[in-house]
Length: 345
Image (tube, rainbow, N blue to C red; front, side):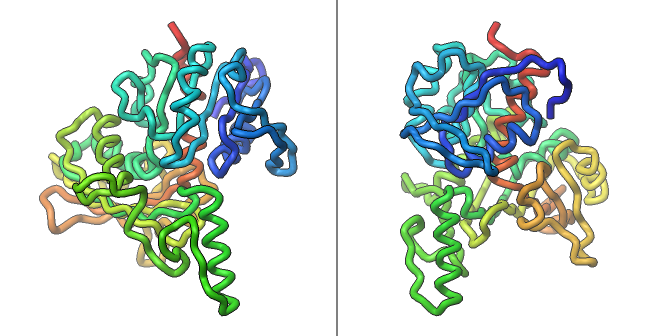
């Protein structure tokens, strides 16, 4: 988070004003980002209210990026169109694009950044920087420090992902289904292929090939390799949508090259920026999504030995998928860029 009254200010635009875009607007103010002007762009011209403040929304078109310093593209997971159509157009206008969508993540010329883990990877950026997938960010925040100490060789992750990851329509659908159930009325669904209230859906993303993996599971493996710079790490993931409004949870089984005790892992994680250890299970103290929602940190607990693997540990972590998993991480990228002067050369 940037501080100081003498800081240079920047013309900023947010592209999209759904669940992620709204939090970007909120966090730019909350984190004291040096905004000279804030412009919101979307498909149609209108007015949106965030925390009681009305914001005019302009139509997103190439010329709208003229004079902008930063453009935060706020597409939710799987959303296509805005960054594909307008991302490079914004760069041509001299604007730095930070993209929350998945269109450019695996492009070799585009840095994929978690600021606490690999900020140096954006040093030679070409104007566009990608935000990783929300589950990847939440999982790697605690794993990065452990990887540095003992080197991750194998990773098995089971995710429990909140409906906010799908967007505002999914939040409304879960709420409507819960109310309908309480009133004894039929539960209808449109956003998901099945009822989500009081249910689990073992599919996040879609199944586009015959591998049996969903797109979300593929992303987590590929993005882990790119961020850690090591494609020899074996990654297996099962991603599940759960009836939680906000906050993703992940059970992580990790095997290291070197032995690492639970006590040593707790000590490392306690000193890791952006991570908070909450690990007193005997007293019913452990990370939960209701605590992670609205928190900057990724919460980690249930740290214990994995008896099924050599040099293995088990972790349980929770993080706000809309904040650290999306809007917050994007803004942190811009903050680091300003601090390190990672602008166009």
